[in-house]
Image (cartoon, rainbow, N blue to C red; front, top):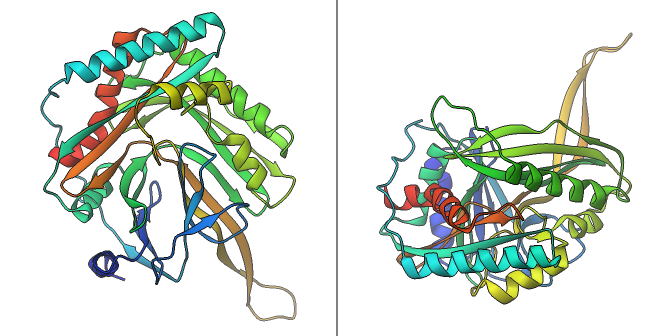
Length: 369
């Protein structure tokens, strides 16, 4: 299928207010479209249904599911030009002061022993004349190593993003996840040098995931920590894998989400602090999204004695869920961009503000270029 035909299908769905999502997985050259043929708002509770899920940050709220009434696949060849960097941001001094004060408040709570880490975020709004489909194509051309998506439901809203972080991937009973924390600005031809703050933050996230999965998976494996680039920033990443004790993802998702990489530690105390102090609703930012219980067919040839070449088919149950980072919500002619960072005892408020400025460029470059 041609990419233009897939976009025409999505535009048609959008014009009659029917839910859909179009997306491309990291390092792939196909774009997938999932379309629901009515505007009913479906929810998933025990994660046994099939569909494309979209979950909010607050795990006490319901996860939306787009039914797979139609699934289309199109080739997409990136032009490799991407978007140009925007001019230096004009800083909103009121928003800056609020965020610096918020970080200071978080550090004081850490020093009091309320929690070890908390992730604090902010939202900025910019005007845009670009359509959601133009923005999506810009994401595809710019962020080949990220999960890029455009998601729409008339009763929820219009979101798009390019996230580098996997919540989990499952293939039958095999499970993979990752911890992703720490941030450094990307400088061409220069490897990142990590400080105590970033290393401590990464270790906290990795240890939480290992502990959360201890009762859920067998043969738990934790990889070496490596530096990975996501757009204009570097992160630290550690891979975690194992064999699920049950095929149902419900308990694993509840154990992982929200992870310390987007919330904090201990999780419940950090989440309460976020909900009480950030002064805005994250909605689906730092939630998760992706394929839930998709069926994947595998074919292989087998040449056995006294038999002609035969084709064997196996069907796998797969799920690929991503943490909703580097994202925006579109409201008429405005783009609401969400950005945050992990706060530990080693954090410096001014530097934490600067980190959010660097991270926000991922989406701002797409909107303003």
